[in-house]
Image 1 (cartoon, one colour):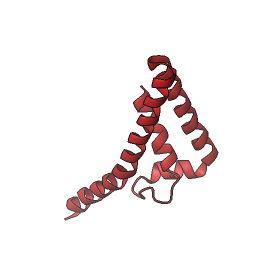
Image 2: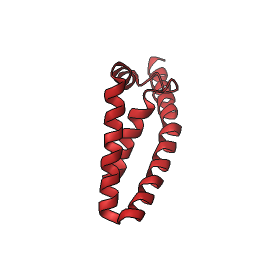
Image 3: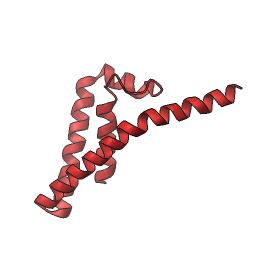
Image 4: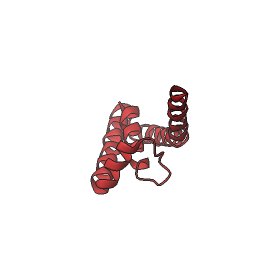
Length: 97
């Protein structure tokens, strides 16, 4: 459950960036129209994830697990989002041929 919550929060926070792939315009438009709601939702998801981690693993171990998950998921989102956009673009260009 922690993994899913942190993943959604990471995508929400990254969707406001100017480096977010233009291919995912729906997510980007929603996050840019409501930046405060997007940020509050993302931080609430991260807060819920840390509560789940601490309740499952204990205070220190849960916090360390949460931090590790944050680092892994954020780096994965930053690396995977442009690749997924490129992959979708290449599939659509193959269909038009």
